[in-house]
Amino acid sequence: MPAPTLMNWSGGKDSALALYHALRDPRYHVTDLLTSVNAHYQRVSMHGVRVALLDQQAQRIGLPLTKLELPEMPDMDDYERLMAATLAPLQDRGIQHAVFGDIYLEDLRRYREQQLARVGMEAIFPLWQRPNADLLREYLDLGFRAVVVCVNEKYLDASFCGRELNANFLRDLPPGVDSCGENGEYHSFVFDAPYFSAPIAFELGEIVRRTYQRPAAASTVCPPAPAAEAPAEPAAPDPFAPGFWYCDLLPVAEAGTR
Image (cartoon, rainbow, N blue to C red; front, top):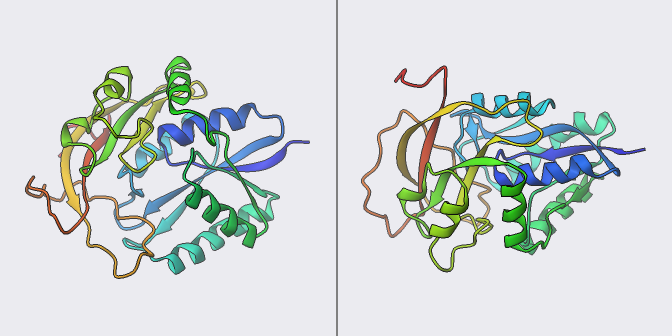
């Protein structure tokens, strides 16, 4: 009998492609989605996507969504405590497997496996160590569509934000940038997938720059998602803090309301 399985859903292309493979694997029965969100801004952690659009993804997939609500700058203790509390009711329903879209970051995989093992769960990595070119070809051939919602200015400039993740985007990536964005070069929002009941309609909003104070210790899980209503910062890079460009996505019902 297939094992009840949790999908760690970021809303981006890697988690979307990992879910595609998990849904087709007879060993697993994906029953739930789990996404980390910034509790204050109600946006997907790191990606900065509005929770309203995250909810639409879950509706199109047809799976229940659990939101792990995190404070603005969680340390590892906060993250692990909140994660354990969020997983507990899912485990009570028999879920002992969790799917991730990681490709080749060994330290991250080891961390996920160790943390899940502490609560008696097993991590699954459907995309692990597959060549980037194969993954991207599969992503395009299957008809996935996504828009780039965040770029790290260490690797990419603001012009890449808000673009559709397609062959033209990949062709324009500078040398040395991982085409799958595995080092955090960019994050995306999937608005159509083979298992969506219908595409998600949205409009592009503001493109803004955010910087985040470097943590005193290397324990910060992720920077907070941006507040869409906050004014953009000056475009000049801050040499002392990491900078990110975010493209706000507006659900069609909200487009043009600000």
